[in-house]
Length: 201
Length: 263
Image (cartoon, rainbow over all chains, first blue to last red):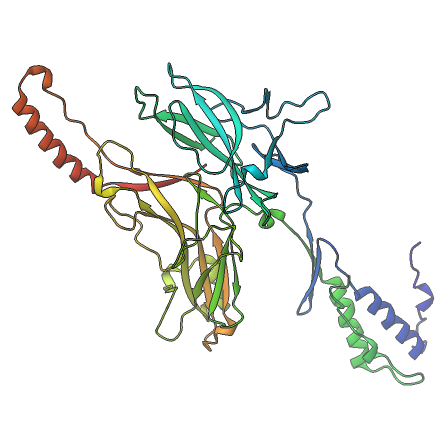
């Protein structure tokens, strides 16, 4: 219901009483009693009052956006769709963006066994390369205690870091990659060794 | 939650029967005017995004000239960049959270900062008010050591290792692969604004974030392969060729550079 101030009005020539004036002040004061709140900030800069509000953010579901949920014995990580060299990694036998019958994305569980001495676990994309054309033949996601040693026809790309508490229980995840990546193999050796290259695409 | 109680008008109120003075009436007018002058703006959440290498600063409690520089975790070549320590480099997840220390200028001693000349001032610091203040800059960089450069094999890509943070004056940007500096990239600049009264407690430190993604890096070395003569059966030419190749590689190695890119 709108507030009416019509009864405060005076006719031409009327005396303005103290009661009327003070009621007027009280009304103005109540109007200026501005409050902020979550996402809203009120500030006075000289004679200027500035109210700033947090813009409604759009949740950008970027490639390889990692979501974590506590699971018995560890932390379950799932990823939004992302590609490395045009290939989508798999967890188990499903692509990372391929939901099951219950619309659940595949997840990799990081347990305390995956945590290294400084309380970290590294979640890598394990990239298998075919010897014939040096193209990606498949990508899976694995948790490791450190960067794995180089091996023939194999490359690794760090996707996320899991941080554990003092008892080596996985607690939180730090994203590393937020874009699709390009991939190329250079310095190709007959032994299957090569140098992997990654870049944003 | 009351964040601002903007106006208190009770002192302007009048007692019953008294005259309403121009001053009191005008005070009420001013209050209404402020109400009409409310400005709105929206803030973007982007500043809150905890991206890799995000730099934040805060003044240390014990000394107003010292600023702690905290950096969110990030990687180069999938290796965590670490905080240098006299005894052992510390990873960014260590407890307590590691940080760098930037020391503000004191008299003629610039410590971590470099004075910024008028011509080099960014636009942000060219307002009338800013011209009245001194401006200094420090760089937050990642440095790397080249691996096994003493046993440099031309033609093989060089590896970099031990990526570490540093805050201070900007190290040389270009270098040969033989440089002990290895390679650096600036991830943020810290702009320190100082009042003319030289009071460090009134200093303002602004962060200009430059890098916000994890990085990859490599040494880029020019290489030219001389042809082999073995199949011709003239061995002495091969020996000569090897000497020329070695000299050529050594010469080209001085033109090497370290390149960084986002991944």
